[in-house]
Length: 262
Length: 201
Image: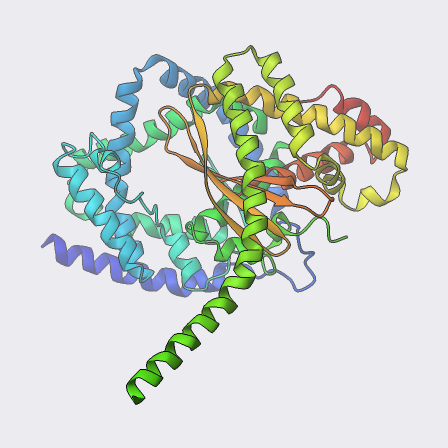
């Protein structure tokens, strides 16, 4: 029964996403200067950024630091492991969609090992065994592999920096996660809760670094945009340097440009 | 007979092809080696600073020394100015490079606190256009290992690194954004920027 329901939801979701996403990701105008981020919604983005920053200052940051400092490291690790493990099936689906069978097998293997030997994903024996690192594949990356352009830079409420392609991918990922169709509702919240806590832990442990961007930069908005776009493109390259080595069609290509060539 | 001949021919062809591929690779390997040697030195010194357990001020001083010796601060500083680099005098540029060096040392040196108990390992080297990328992995306690690339060039006349990319994030490019924002906030006043940079970081 559930399987049928899943198929009924997934198929139209993908079809819908496919049609509207390709049309939705704004094309960069031909005269857009290379090396400049493509940010046509900068005014709105700055508004959301200011809102997010206020939310961080008054709520997220203090809670995150409290969590990172107050909760035993071992507990934080278990929470992180649990959340990471639950993200694997969705990554497997995306690896398949990207025709990355190797990644799909690696993530499946990791999920199997950590779910069984790792007691439902609370522990991470896969890393201890030296197994391949998780691919962290998401639908934004799948769209990239399918040739959908990055689109404009976007700041999303609460979660922050994104691009049109990445934000659309995030939305589709909600429907692509096989676990969301097999885990019944109250239990599914444990996974969501673990993910939120794990993100809070990241914010708390890296408080100094994140603070320096948000609160000490001359223009935190521009700095965060630069960091996000660079890092996202690096992740899309997925360890192979083809994306990294191709500076010509990406605005941040300047990162790889030869500064001696003046 | 024919069999032997063809085998010898095959062997010869094999060696010739081998020599052809070995020659340029041999030449590249030399610079790869040099790039790697430079980063090995940098990484050893950074690891020593992390392990020293010094207070932050000491780490900042050590980092500035490493940065001064192994990085092409000139080209990094100059490129963070972008097009503005062309409109400033030599004297201003000297002062800017000097202020920039101290700023970077303070800003990144104090981060070394987060590295306590960690280490960096050099993994591989590859040639990219006119420079070499030395790829290394940073291991920190309780964190997944992450990648740092050092971009090394000899175009200044010495083997020096001119950028550091942490998980794809370039220090040079991030600082270019930062310096650009600082300059905008000061209506393009370079002298004011230099004065404030001496205190920043």
